[in-house]
Amino acid sequence: MTDKLTFDQIDEIMDMLTGGELPHGMRMPDQPKLMRRQAFSIVWFLQEHTGIIPSHFEMCQVCEELYDSDRGGYWLDPSSEPDDWLTEIGVTPEIFKSAPEGGFCQHECEAKFWHRHIQTMSEATP
Picture 1: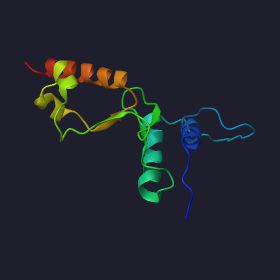
Picture 2 (picture 1 turned 45 degrees about the vertical axis):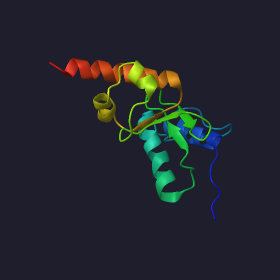
Picture 3 (picture 1 turned 180 degrees about the horizontal axis):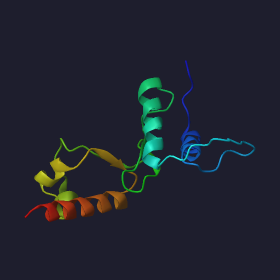
């Protein structure tokens, strides 16, 4: 059985894929320079297809930082209902269901997402 990678190792993979720093002493002549979302799609593939990366490592859809969902973060599932906090900030069930599924590393990122999503929805309404 293959050992699973750690959060720090996945962070190093993301750095390598995005043209960031390599571990001490390493050089890569043709290092990729992917956008973070593109790089995370490779991490996601390794999670889903190989299982060598645990599925609880996610990328925040707002700030694009990695986080461990076993230790925190928030997951948006539009098939559920908005909670009291979301209702208080103006997220109606219709707005909630129109949002894409995704994760947030912290409460502030989720708040930024909803602020932008509500604004986009209100601009789209004539």
